[in-house]
Length: 245
Image (cartoon, rainbow, N blue to C red; front, side, top):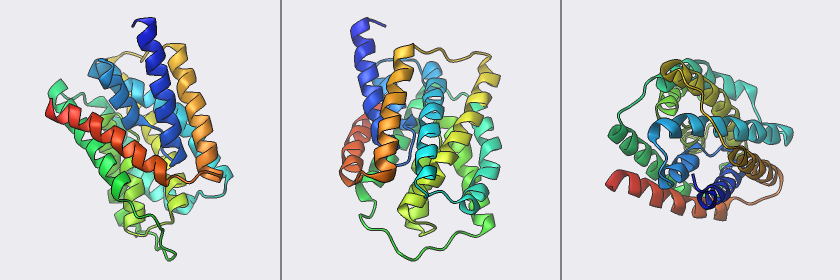
């Protein structure tokens, strides 16, 4: 990759990591959109997005836990079946056209949920029953492995929409959910392809810088309403490009 393109890619990765981590996510769908726009192959995009996801999710999970928002009783029922199914999804490599359409729909869904997420959170919340949480986690885990995301873009809005938790707690639970599923999905992908994803060091640094700043501000100081709307625009453009071209 030419040095100019690498610099632009790093800047884009930094912005994506910052925006996503500020709302308790790790950025996989944004990394996928960015790398797709820069012309990287799907076989490279999927494991690369998972690696960056692991790095940023680690920072995000720590910052939201440190701020006191994490709930273990809420987390583990979602995670217990999602991890093996994320491995299965990571093992499966979809044809290029299927990959593009599926990821495009994921990005459009992400954009819609950022546009229409309620601005205020409900005060009264009720955790889901264990069977509901197990089933939900299993489905999201499989989809996260197939698409190279951590699943947080699905779990967070479900938790808020069904009033399973408050917004900050949903972000904290999703951050660790993303981390464990990204690790599982990456291991599944490596088992299938027999290849380790390789990265330029500047790309890794860019993700860490953006993730560290975003997760700190998002968990403790920053209002994320405007960030979510800006992020939705980026995802809408990228998702539309994948689905309709």
